[in-house]
Every structure is written in C-alpha cells, then in structure tokens.
Length: 122
Image 1 (tube, rainbow, N blue to C red):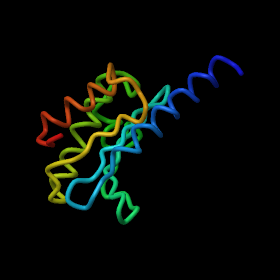
Image 2 (cartoon, rainbow, N blue to C red):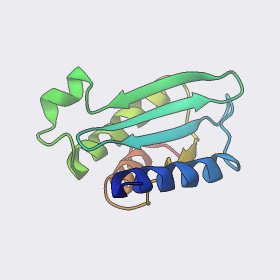
Image 3 (cartoon, one colour):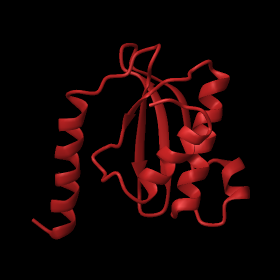
Image 4 (tube, helix red, strand yellow):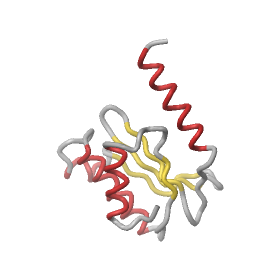
C-alpha cells in the first residue's frame, strides 16, 4: 500500500467512525466538509430524506471572483460564510458539524469559524 493510499484509507476510517454518531435531520442538518488539494466544499445534508439542502464550494462562480486562493484558508472561510448565508435563506440556523475525517485544523477550522461568524450554530 502506498503512503497516499494509507492516508486516504485512514481518513475514510475516521469518517465512517464519525458518521456512526452524527446524523442530520430536517431541523438540524449535517454540515459536511470535504477538502481536496485545490478546493474546499461544504454541504448541508438531511440524512433522513437523503438529500442535499444547500451546497457551496470554491468552484462556485461567485466565490471564484472574490477569492484569490481557492485552496487556502481564505477560500475555506469564504465557503463557510457562503454556506451560512445560504442556510439562513433556507431558514436553517442550527447544524451538526461533520469534518469528514479531516483534522479540525487549517482549512476545516477556517470554514467552521467563518460559518459560526456568519450565524450558524453548532
């Protein structure tokens, strides 16, 4: 097994372990975070109905115009602010945070802090 595959498998194991205790509902959806090498994505998911309520990412056209670095903390913070604004438009104020097996550090933390600063509670 290569080092890259081992890291990915470790993250997926952590994600499965986290998901055994975290579940989103219509009143309190799950804020799922995914970060790739170049981009950061966030979704609000209703696990009961199995559908995505709101999504944002650094690939969105409106965020591409305003953010200089898509892969850094600045891009993650912009995604956090965007997902919080879109959630509040849908009437969602409280969520369950799902870090997706990633460490709560760097871009994941920047996204969470920006979402909290924009009014989401978790």
